[in-house]
Length: 408
Image 1 (cartoon, rainbow, N blue to C red):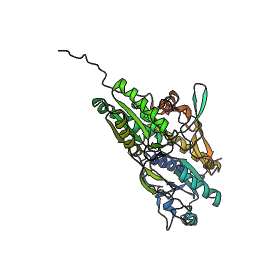
Image 2: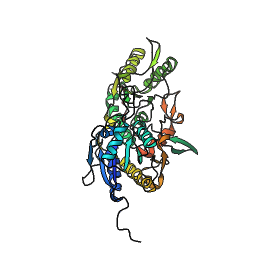
Image 3: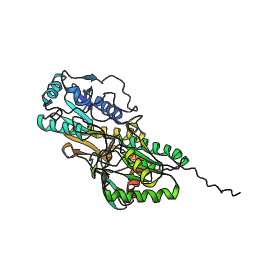
Image 4: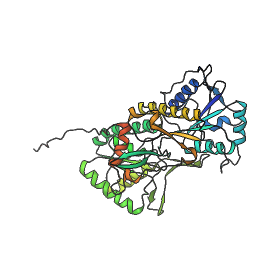
């Protein structure tokens, strides 16, 4: 039987991206847009996340406009707007969202975001019944996707979200670049990496030469700090240089106040209640210098892993997830999010390796204990195997030569 019209002809699909940007959001938008057009949808873009559905709305037409998915970030812009009442903004703005969805005649909504953006989408879906599909996004890689990692006969619940592969590549390259200056001056370098509650991204520094790491999942109590300094002293004595990766959200013991806490760059919070981190690397480096008498320097990677081009792995990953998203729409399975079923190398990123989860069961997934050795402050072979599927084998450059000392 011949079909004369595309299945969703006359319908409109809109895409929004909220929260922190990653190098893979434009690729996600591009791939969702392309497949939606094949199904007959008119495609709109909602600017600045949920903010674009408030007031009179801020909506653009993506239907017949070329879209560059290789360039990082989001051309639709982003914000940390929460349509539900919060301490910072007590107004319930969901009625504004619903009004604009009706005004712009939007039939299906795809929300690209993490736990905050997609959590709000899920609540609106449950409360108002709008057809919505979540699309995963996070640089921290802590969005629970129920993705399994097979290692040595074990099944470990891992996470893999678009944006993380590109960010991990950036951090591994940055760490690798720091090695030559670190060796030249026989320093200890403390590299601060994004990660409010999880150390997934911090682990990628080990692929470029970081030999130790501190992650939010394991608090640096007074007792653990003592063991940490002993380990730093031992490792530095062996090679006379050392790179330590530190998650920005590490809980660090303050010897003066006798309290365990985080280091904030600002006390202000966004609409989801999150403060802005920054500076723990300086605190750790300063204490290393005082305790061990070794020159230690802090280096903050900052927004570097969020910026730049989308990696090849992420390009293919977002394409496969977009295939699954369209499958969910065709089946009418709204309120769900496409995810990777199990960890695979780049050539395995196909729709048949994707599955879906209910948006209500997303939540956050911290680094698994199998991936981090809290006694030696190092990432394990299991983590190396996990990330090797994405980045390939770790590579640590060094001077590669020793010299015979001349005696007069």
